[in-house]
Image (cartoon, rainbow, N blue to C red; front, side):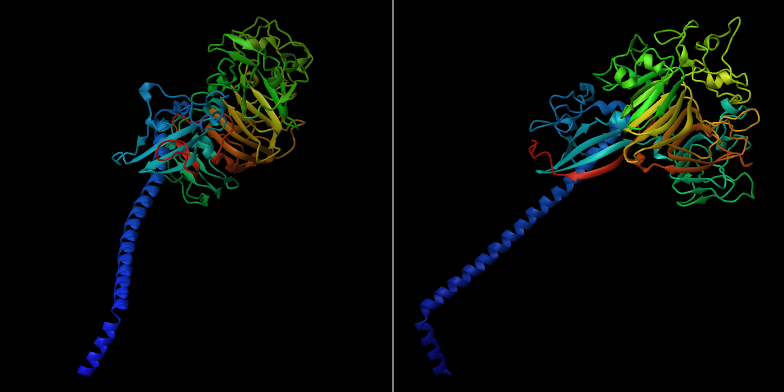
Length: 602
């Protein structure tokens, strides 16, 4: 053993140089491993912190969207504010700024730009999470949609999202009512105008029928009444705090709800009038609120949509198609190529004009005074459509000594367009024909195949749908119909309750978002005659009072209401919104960060 150890010592002694190299090499390797481990540990910590900031920056961007939504809710006019120097708000220096900075009393740090610009702090983050946003409201007037580009900043990390915000309103529902009862102004009666759950008499209701199919979301501020297997394909909500619905008799068949029984949702308030749309025809606001004025017509007006993006307009009482001032100070016919020349509008043939894409048409009552007023002595020859050569002067004054009204075969006074039709009986018993077809009324009579884009047609009085209204292109065409008063499905009957020649075809289709601000959407003479087939509405229906379209006796129309799902993202141009509204996010998408951590654009 001693000899063996002695031998090994001699071998090691002879390998001293190699051993030293091995020792040093092993030490270097161990040192490198230690250094690498430390470096890896520190890198992981650094990366972990960076990942945390990166994730938090997205949350900060979301916080910016929510903060902007709250500002809109508190002040709807906030849509006009932003930073006009933003590349998102005003991409071209040659265009009029779409937004403006708010006054100093409403200064908003989220509108900051550049390295010296401000950021808004996320609440509760002690200033560590920040955001800034840029506003694009170019399409707001047309569709009610605002685009917001929000960037979050945490540490040196930034992330950006773009969100489309749209007002929540009437067109979120295929079917909306304030009161589930007939309109007292149209059908008469002494029903108290309160909701059923507030104590209205149970006899003052309109119920859904077994044959009705409602293919979209429904909301009523009132209690819904059902007696039959009505099918509701969408979500149903009610302003009744207890939710649910009511059956008028215990023997009634239950409704069919694909998405569950009606649940409570807060009531939605109607605006007082639709005159906000009339403002969109003023030509003195082109640098501020109305960059693209629509068309104004006066008195009874007939609109027929034609092929090729055109529409024919007959409006015998119109003198100016645009106005200036509020109250009106002057008229303007400078947009005759868009709205029609006065001579053509007053002629028997009418004016063929382009559909005002992404714009509005407003039909006003004939004013008693001012530039668009009418006098008893005025005449328009053949434009009356009945050969009399006058504008039914007796309709224009309260009580003439010897009234000589234009009359149809039932001695019902006609307006200048020939409504009511020959042999047509008064529209509503007890109200008189003048209440429905008055010569001063801002009524619009409309039908045809819409092509050429999106348009909203509004009337100060009634809207009459005199035939089918269909879209040529269901992807690009869109129509809004807004009556300050009722919206009627034209269904003329003679004194024998028989459909008048020219209006005997069964079934009716309306592609539109329909809104009656103060009254109802209903069918003329729904309670008499034989079945008229099916009323198909492809769009949305909103009304103050529930309008009947049929009776259980087999008269009128069966309902086939189908929701236009495009309304989840957009709306007809300048369509009215509720008195109070909120903004929902329709679409959001993350994009490459637009700002560096320094605040400069990338």
